[in-house]
Length: 377
Image (cartoon, helix red, strand yellow):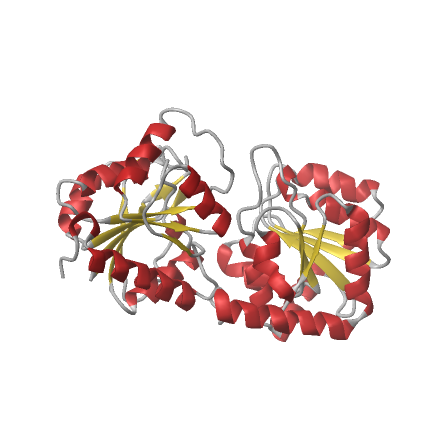
């Protein structure tokens, strides 16, 4: 079986590990943008996968971008199935869906969208075209699958996260913990609660700062950058915790495991807005794989990702978050228990290998059923 895999997410080196996991079982011909925004495509880390770059128009725009050489890509690849790692309303999904039609090559798409809302023109029309012709869909969560059903998609939907975790990269690492804390000038016995991700209002990092100010001796590590950074720094100063708060700034994907190991607990305090609800919370499974206990708000998919392996609190409830932090700070054994449960959960549900195997099973079903042309083995 040969799979043409189209994915802007795989521009990130750490995310290319999924291609390697798939390539252990089938022939992967992956296409990633030569440039995304201001960044050039990163070095390919996917062993055994053929990865090439394509010239992208409107690069940096998630749902507007297309490939200038898409027709030549499909012709030269001659795939048995095309995997479009993009939302069904994205221009690039529509572009490749149209190119698959003349040769009757089946294609599947991926969807994170978990709010059932009106998709404006022309994206609504593109989604209708894709949903009418796709052989199957992959939804990152059950809620995303429900949205696809509500939009009229009646073929198979497999619920599989977009990306898994490499448990060899994300693992408990005492040496990394020591190195990170030394760089941050944080003592080994300090209790550190942290956040990792883009600093935007909906991620609720201000709630973590407020909770840390109300909890005794809680240090805060904010891993990442974004438009909210200056405001969050001012809030930490106003709360009187600036001296025990650290901001790393931008962190490359390959360096995230180091900084996660500096934490005693990771907090994802996302807040739902009118147009957004947490789709998954990838940093949760990265922290869990690292043996770091997690606390998440009840926004979107967070409670389902955490399951029984961590703690949750009501959205926006600072007092409840304070209580969770105090509980974990007080009992080291409880932290160790949750850390072990989290890693066990990731190994069972969220590794790259598990996601690759589930994805391969979907490919097999599509080709066996002869949807949109059937097998060309």
